[in-house]
Length: 376
Image (cartoon, rainbow, N blue to C red):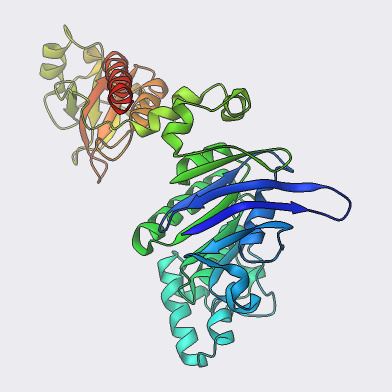
């Protein structure tokens, strides 16, 4: 556990970057510092590995003051990932990753073997090992940065806005990769971002900082969204925090319908006529059960289904894995107002209406209120 105890950072000109900050960062978790520019989140991160020295207070790592060991020893026990990766441009990818193990005295073969193992873990093709950073995309470089930080198997990983310089699609992939790696390795990760969506997605705990280095709220993401501490936190979370909160409600209990699903090789005319009275649209799938689009029953004549007749089905969700937010998103993106549920292989397992999703949301909110009463 990392304990930050009444830490203040005051610069010679009188500027206070962090003001009497106290909190505990749990082991094997992702703790995210988030807030506006100038709120002290990066300064706090750098005080953990003594790149910045606190003016007052102390930081404890597993109960021991971090000043009790040499600074170089401390830093080598912590992985550090920054924006734009900070790679050595004159070294190959495999040697970039092997940097810290080599500093720790590992021989070249052992260090490179470890680097090759980590390339696979972070999703990098082994063919990239002998390339140089300039030959990789931004997303690939960030993966190298994560691999390098993990190379010596440090218990603590510090990450300073590591994904902010890449496009949204690559960023989502990197976030998912980090969650997968954390699930496997269980590091103590301290992550800095200015993006509240990233904080909510990644954080086990989220520390919202306000200008002047003050802690506004420190809580799990679901609690943060449900019960913001004050107007500043509420405003920082944004007007759509209720939608974000749905990310913490499971979709497993949604009642799915299978009757409106027809495979393209069935007697669609017969099924269409049977379903027309109950469903204005039918979900058409291919022979493997993967959705193709929605069609009106009267148009689904056997042997004459054409792609241009079908209406896009929006974004599908996986029941049990995805949240009610994903299900609601799928229904809103679908012109029919129905969300498509698929299994892990992308095969349709049912459909669900906005009305049913809305009822599930109301039930989840009611259960949340009941739980709060019991807890109180």
